[in-house]
Image (cartoon, rainbow, N blue to C red):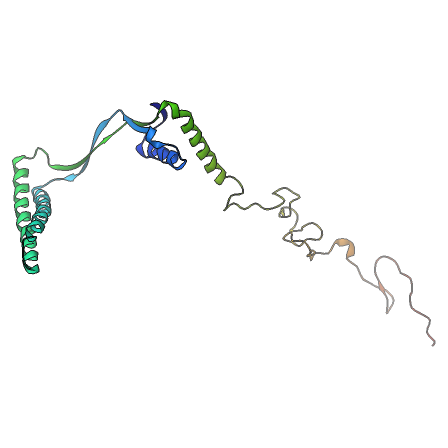
Length: 229
């Protein structure tokens, strides 16, 4: 067996083996080995005589349920079966509470707390059989590239606007007074001309002779025909 990868927690090593399994790799040639083992005991609370009796009662009730179900198999009626189960639970709970209280009293306060113990490792190594190491590395690399491809640009959930954010893009409106290129509207949509008229088409009227309006570009050709008086 040769090391393939090392992780500080078991969950990461488990995910690696699961990835190899999804890729079709023969995971029966792999192993997860924990090193630097140590015992960790987590204190969950203070233990009193009442809590010791309650714990004993719950353990006794569970044992009484099993005994009652076994004895109820030899009864003839349903009422007898239920009665035996209930009485077994009650008496077993009472006996368990007594034993729990007595055991805590005999400890004389040497262990007045409850705890939960677990064996953990400093790091976890994923080992693979020597002939399969390169194949395992290729499978992990292929899975990693597939994951990166799903999160690359163009994947679902990522929107890219055509034309880009450059100054010539159709959505670039900064420092242009919301004016788009010719033939486009304010939002850059083709086929809808802008509602803003250029300054060259603005006219200025000045008062002249009655009945005439000076357009500011000189008089144009007179297209009126002579009419008889």
